Image 1 (cartoon, helix red, strand yellow):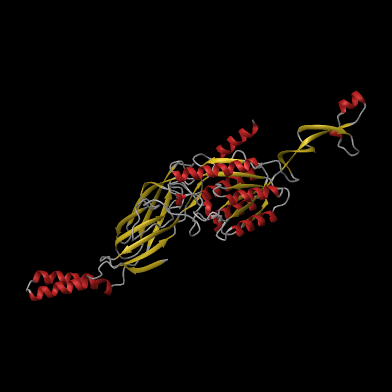
Image 2 (cartoon, rainbow, N blue to C red):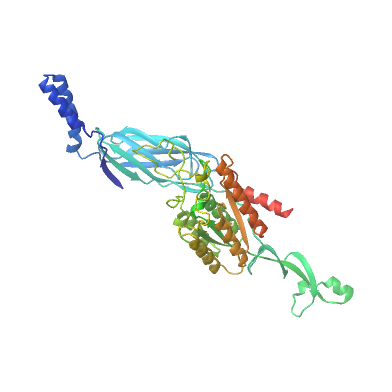
Length: 473
């Protein structure tokens, strides 16, 4: 896409030049008259030219496309002038992924390019959990006078995939009928002894306790604890309250989407059925299933569905800081081309996780208010069968998500919450938000809903292993 516009750089110069020319004529000052002629020439030049023609090729090289969390990754952008005219003033802004901070260098570059000439610049990103796609590179070219400019966006597809294997998924005992790895309280075939019972006609011969029969003459059948596969729906909280972040860090929705992908991959490895849901702009639903095609569909939905967008809905949060995500200060010419990290927990009551409102008002699950919260939770309940459990990924920054978890649990679907912690203790508002989040976590646990507290400075796998160790004590 290409946009042509005038900058207004020489606005008013004609009037000044004519005034100077008049002074030069009446005062008989040739030097002043010459200055006026130069000024008029600069003002007239953009009117008799068509402006720069931009034909550039962009290539982006990433040093490590699959880094670990918090690892630096170098990005090198190469821009070539493929046109036949010289570009005297070229300004380039690379499409930095919204959730990755620029930790070194700048994603902006300014230069001049002759036909066929190439320029190259590099910057460094710090990897964060998730799959991060680069946006289009913006190229702005001005003519010699700086009065006319043309803005062009060029695609150079690349992404950074920062994922780690999850060693254990926090599943509860609710299972389906298919054989799997989760031990149940039901007796039958298996590998772990459960009990013995009186023999019934038709019992398999290999489960008869022949030793007892030889001793007592009584036929008994050995029961083992059955192991069955789980059916799990991974539900991401992508409502406006979940678009919260620490300064310079990805928001909780980004962490939730990354965790959902890792958990779905782990469920596929253990041959459990995985499905996907999300609360947010719209209700998202992918029924539990198995197989390579199903796994690929879940990955595609996680990467492309609008409800899981890294860009927050309008009005859901505030921007923070005076620097944009490309590594340089904001300017009228460029402006921030990608959203800045949200920091609604930065020190004042206006920055708390809950918006200031009347005592009787409560935030809803999406822009539609409480009715939409109830509607999306009810929709999920209608789609769940009695054998499916829910793994809810939420930062627990408001009460509606707690009610949703309790409603699903009361409806007969076992719920486990994995909660990325995006609060901070550095400000008064942050400490209050952290306390409220802890209270919500405790209320869920008192109601029998397990909560895994995930410090996003570490991997999801480490948090899940620690939670599993606590449960086994």
